[in-house]
Length: 52
Length: 310
Image 1 (cartoon, one colour):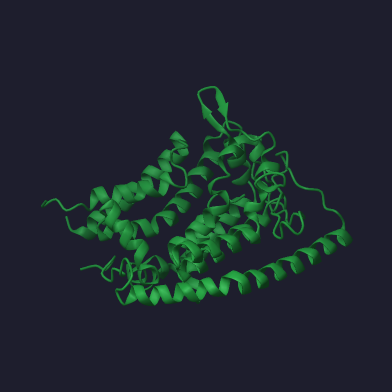
Image 2: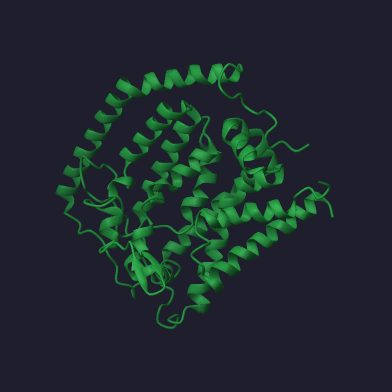
């Protein structure tokens, strides 16, 4: 999978985490600091260099 | 108060501010008035325990006595001067000034409004577009906000960002956002070991969060809220009608005009004096510091390859 595809998948997952976590679980943990940080964390996981 | 507008407006400001401004500072400014003040508004709940809860949330959040002065132009001015004094960074000064001012003005649209000209007047400025309802708790506030023009306000900012969607592109990030504040992005990359994809995601994160917040809370308010049958959509000015709206009483046009004149005059004199006594000196010092840093004489030179895709 190319980096661009992994990035796209990462963004889709981040959106799902925020919407499902926000609407269904309604966790206060997804606040305006932790919510955006979760986007970065998901992208870091999806785009990490696996050759290392 | 706004639920997603503050996050979204930072991208609009980044696009339209015609002077060099740090995006990180713009975002920080857009969030700053609520940064240390929001928690007691809804309270911290651990099990059945309610901790750090303001007795009258709207008075605490926007009033005086309270932390209402965080939502004033003075806060924006002081924060921008502090950025000049502490970080010697003009892009941070501009970013904080613009971002914090935007937050102060955006919050004038709910029924409580903000004390724009504090401390010269404690007059609240409000357009009363939607009901301030934080006293109903987090869920009550969400239900009221996303059943009123407040939700429309968030959607409006979402589409304003999308009309200039290039602001979210990788190219814009690499060619404008990073060069405006290379130090901050280099620090992020260095400290958290971010690759370029994660760094770009960090820039886009508050847009994604804001957009998802609109969808998630609107979905909850309209589809999952147990009281959705009675807590219906009401797009009338100052709505929704079914929530207990809080606001400060209007003092009458004469008093309002007098307070405004006092506020504008006091504010103008303060800004002129503040600039002449501190601002100009700090600005010139920051300019000299930036030149030295660019030449590599400073403690840390800008990382020119930050965020650029290989």
